[in-house]
Length: 490
Image (tube, rainbow, N blue to C red):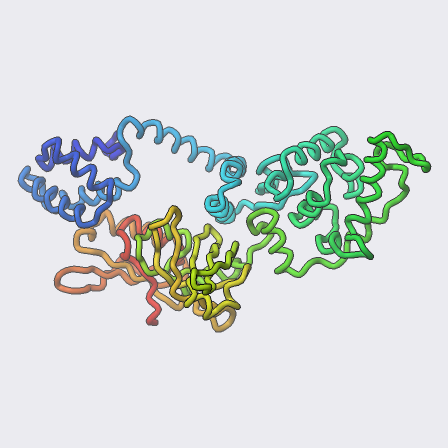
């Protein structure tokens, strides 16, 4: 494999040939690396380096070699799997490079019902400069699909809309394929099977933005005009006439089976004032499960990140009992009571790239009940709890973040990276340089060498980085947990 470790058995071969391990000892090394137990990894490092020295290999070369073996444990597979997984990785890389929009549309379809993975891939689309558009009755298919034309965009599928089943979507697609694009809301009501166009379906499509391309506003469509919403003023007579025709009742006014004899219908009433932004996004999220056209955290993510210890999407990498401060927007919320009748709350805290479950027991909840509300941006401090079926944070504090002109800024902090003596190798330093160059930003980097003699500043050049979740995650993978942090001491 051209000097590159590809599968786990190669670790065993290296240990046997270069460090004098027996096959049993080599298998123990493989298991230790796979389980990632730091104290055992340290013991194996000492044994491996000592064994290499006995075989006539320099201590420095042995340490460098172990530095290559250690991160390999995060992705190495047995030989039986490595070839197949490698081929899949090659196919994936090719598709991402050559057909990114089509590939991400397929990925989003595969996770459309997964509340954790879907926001992660929607965020990935943003980072890839791929726009994700809300559903549209004239452009959407059943599932996520590349938007028509030359746009670098993905269109939400109609089946992703709450209360809109596949049968309803198929009725819309059949009408569109047989008669061309719908010219207006009234045209859709005339052509789609009336049995599919229930009040719940049409309201859900409105709030999801599926009629936006007609030039209407969502607020205009749902505004009350007398006893009916504006959309009902347009749809009700058409659908009533069509259902009557289907039942064999003929109109005295000679309307056809498509309701065309009802005369001109004024659709101008559908273009009223738009909903306020907060309500519009809230309804959109209710129908699609995600914010799509905008997100309340966009524009404040750096301010929020400056007040937290970790991004939400890093929670699975942490251990049981770890203390964290995370920021996000409250999604689903359930208020409950203890056996003593004390109120507490369970809610989902959502970031741009994922979410985490939070439980706020009475002492925490009763201090800030006004903050623990849906669609509220909050900071949560608490401890990771891995004892249940799903990772959650047991909150010790919920508070309001400081946003706006007075908010802390990421660029006011420095990124501190600590290098243990065993990790301070040329290969690791070169990798650090590559990471810093790949994440330019405003936070200065401070590199420190940790040894028994104390802490010594290191210089690898002058770097300013964006200390976002992706860089912090890569540093975690390279150097281990706790190796990097944002220094707010100024």
